[in-house]
Length: 229
Figure 1 (tube, rainbow, N blue to C red):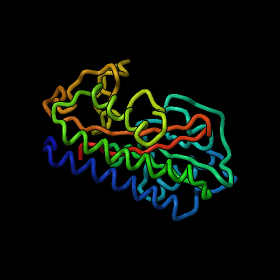
Figure 2: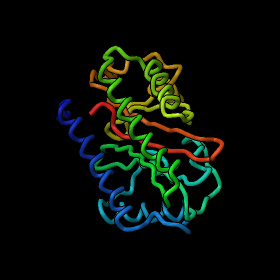
Figure 3: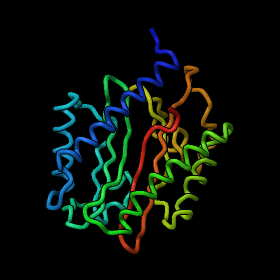
Figure 4: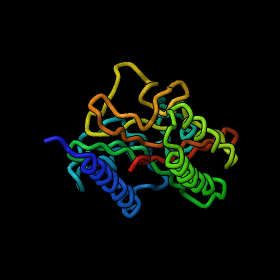
């Protein structure tokens, strides 16, 4: 029996709640620390996710970016960075919980650098702005939303760091168009109404992602979670 719209929303929200709990446990166990490499932290988080939830499937590559690597968008694969005593990093994970996808991203600061702390706060504030804008504009298209989210970087005195500002999410594997990196993304070339239904007549669920950067200081921040639930 197919899930109702309410059940689908609840399953996605539950998957995200698990992802958020995983991030809290990463912090509580002190996994984010100076001297560990991005790849080392990635492996420790993978092991922790298996321990807590039995997760082995991720619908996209697991991202741990620190230092100047935080400037780079998802598609890049930079050299492994070792987290420093006064560093910034972000995690972007896409774990699958019982066939429902989560996509969760947060920024962390090691040390007390005020600009890095501001970055961490600003990406979260911008997410709140973006979600409110989405709720206030029911006829919004993907490209219109992209340009609004991009404009938030200037509001907070940063640059926008990514080629997209979000994408679809759903039951694994979610709706996709082969080799299409535009239509089902919050992308400047997508004219898709974000509240349009999918090919099965179901509500589309979206992720909003905020990626701000300061190229001069070589730092970036990232914040990502469900937009539509």
